[in-house]
Length: 534
Image 1 (tube, one colour):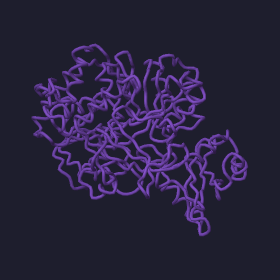
Image 2 (cartoon, rainbow, N blue to C red):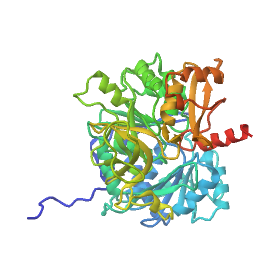
Image 3 (cartoon, rainbow, N blue to C red):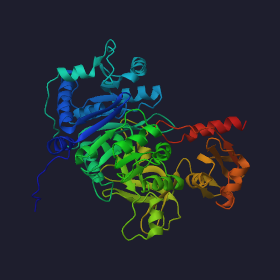
Image 4 (cartoon, rainbow, N blue to C red):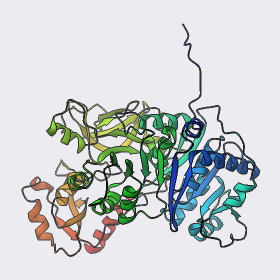
């Protein structure tokens, strides 16, 4: 017997055609230094078609890479869909990476044309001139009120767009590459993940499911995650697919600005890393948040205090999500189930929850590779498998070490899983501390520190110990105007955590360094400790 179903490719152009056909008057909102810009899906789709024609005229062939160096704006969304919907590969260049890493990703992705927001042009020009790359044209995107002339040897975005003729938007093969993102870390050069149309399509459809974020046409979606981070965690594509109103924040992610945007635009769904929510949530106090339905938090575990603050100011807890660039973004989320009583529901919300439909996960002993007991206490390595999970990195000799012999992705996260399959991350493999043969979770210890009312942020890492193998060191940042010393921190931890978890040293700092993806940079903290310990 053979299937009688149509063999229709799962490709990204479907989302654009759907929103343009059925929600042509729905808004795309972009914030700029000069104010707010509004367009509609209908007008946007027309511009995307013209921009696709411009890519033809610029000589960008099928399968070639097009870069965008800038922030989440309607212009970036236009470049994304014009590129992806014509068989080219979109590369959102992480504007927060150091210059040498920016240059590496441009060369590694083989970007032929780069669209750049004008405020970033000087830095990009220096990177292009210094590095080995295939860039043959730079197109400058200006703010609406910026009428200054374009720089020599560059093209103006609006001029390029207006001079082009529209072309059709379609991709016949769902397995063709659609976009490339780089997995950021604190060691080595970024690693490239190339997403197929099929992977992006399936991840987008997952975000529309009720047991996921459940994005629908009635939502107002605000992606605070840059497109360079796993395609903005897929929220822009999901908003387009659903026909939801899409709000793009531009460069300014300050707490007051985003809080005002959430209130004024009646945002219902948003997503960000905990460091962003730490800035935004206090500013939401007293504002109109009745439209808020889901505020997603990922990238690292949210503290209990941050979860409580979200509930206080919006009436809703943060929805913790887990994923990686390598999993296409959302792979698990902490949504309680209908049968869960209040206590169990709170425990699920504080975890990483359950895998989304289509993703398989297992937690295994890193030495024996056997599954750990589902007892909620035995620690193992989290591994993933599924249609939106990578099978290899692009053009990278480090690729084999990230996968098991049977093809599962080794995430680098240490986790426990309970009897019902609920997942809780304990640490990154590189951050978990083994002291005297016992595991110390830096994440759990950080959460214990954050329970102190004077501590605004905290980070824990391990340092070598002749006697114990490793011992924890804590770095804490006090709230402005609040006094704090190491003795007070140690007294706070006494009785809250196991005695052997209590750090040997506590450093009081003015701020914690962060990586290009907004995570705490523990490599930099270790360097700080080494300098103070000499």
